[in-house]
Length: 410
Image (cartoon, rainbow, N blue to C red; front, side):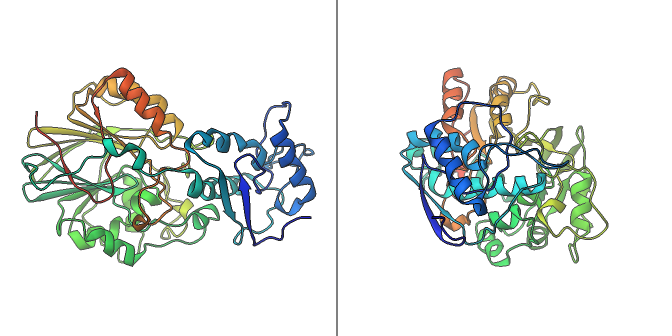
């Protein structure tokens, strides 16, 4: 008997995952668990198809089901003490066969729903979490983590922001490419932790989880936007965006803004399932961006920030096609959300020789900030930690949301 769409399925970590057929895989001997997944798909086609599927037309993807292909992800998390995954299917309609865009949406849904049960918080790594105590000297740069890849840097009454994002658009809207907009209430709550004014906002690339909230934060903090030309174009297409102060930059540029020296560096973006998400370099049309896919990646950037004799490197991830410069820094903030950036991590640390290493963009950014920090399902902090400790390169730290930490001087 098949469960009806819309109910909650309690699925153990070794059982089938009720998502549509999607991913092509090499022929293999199916395990008992995969056979259970296939059996479920055959008996309940409204949730997906079995392991073997007939040839499909152009633009379609044939092969095994998501619930059988991605079972290894679930199994890989059993060591974290996972025993059960709760998937709420109320919003999921029968997908049938998926084209490539539908496949991406289905995979995002799977990963997001699974992350609610599979991902841990900062508790197991509490000894790595740093923040200022009442007696902490404030003579260095004060760093506040805003979630996703967002940061505030403060120094002697001046503030600089990077990728501020508080709206935390839900996973379903992204997977279905629905209309999205900034969440005014969440932005207001997040901005309670910011300085009232900022000298500039640096944006690493144009995806919604980096740029969506920037126009509102600009208007509230009177900050100057420093971003790629494509990101500036997206912002200027918004009604009442107030972006005449946008400063389009590219790799090699240097900006002196207040006490901050900002060097713009080349970067790349990690691939998700083999492709950079929304990998366009020009806006899709003259109208304002309304859906997640409209917030295109554009030209990814990294930044080297110099202030008060301290140097901070920040990116949002990347690939081995582009490395940071061979320059020693005090703090390296490196995106590690996806496998590409983790492969690149050790090489980046060799070049930067940081005193402190802060892995970034590894929280589940589909959850509201007030729900607390939770690692994203595709992150692998245990590997990041092992690599850093094995190479003994810098002091590995973590930051919790809105808990400032002052970068010590040498």
